Amino acid sequence: MKWKFLSAFFFAVFLFVQLQAQGNNRGNAYYEEMIGNLSNQLRLLQDENAKLSGTVHSLQQELRELRQQLQALREEVGQLRRMITDETAARQKQLGEIADKLQRAAEAQNRPQVKPEPPKVTPGGNLPPAQEEFDYYVVEAGATLSAVSRATGVSVARLKQVNGLKSDVIRVGQKLKIPRK
Image 1 (tube, rainbow, N blue to C red):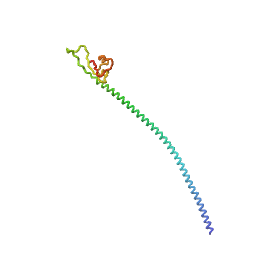
Image 2: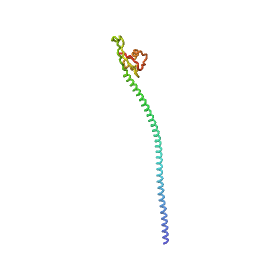
Image 3: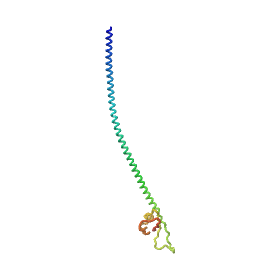
Image 4: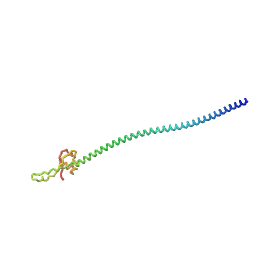
């Protein structure tokens, strides 16, 4: 019986060792499978990381290009603003000059006010025979001979002849004869 017990004990130990070995083999296979799965997942993550790194690099390049374009656009906007400012100043200057010319023309048309001089009467009460009649205009600042001509309807040449002028220059306060029509 001792023998039976010993053989049963050895058989149990043998069985236990066999089961342990199989269990270790199964455990090793499980761990090897897990390591294989983890290795596959690691490779997938490395591939994904490489793709993401490439995408980040592309986006950084695009960002640099967009910043350069933005800088170029800012410079262009600055140039356009300067051009608009310059053009606006030039237009305002031109408009001011036109306004000044119009003002002078309006003043010239309104300025020459011909003041008739009373006819000279001789002691007998009659007008002098064959004498041309004149109105008189006193030259004011800014008046020109051509402005006086336009205002009175008398040509510049006739005004020069009647007033004994050799040029178109007239002076403030000068009294001009204006022939009556």
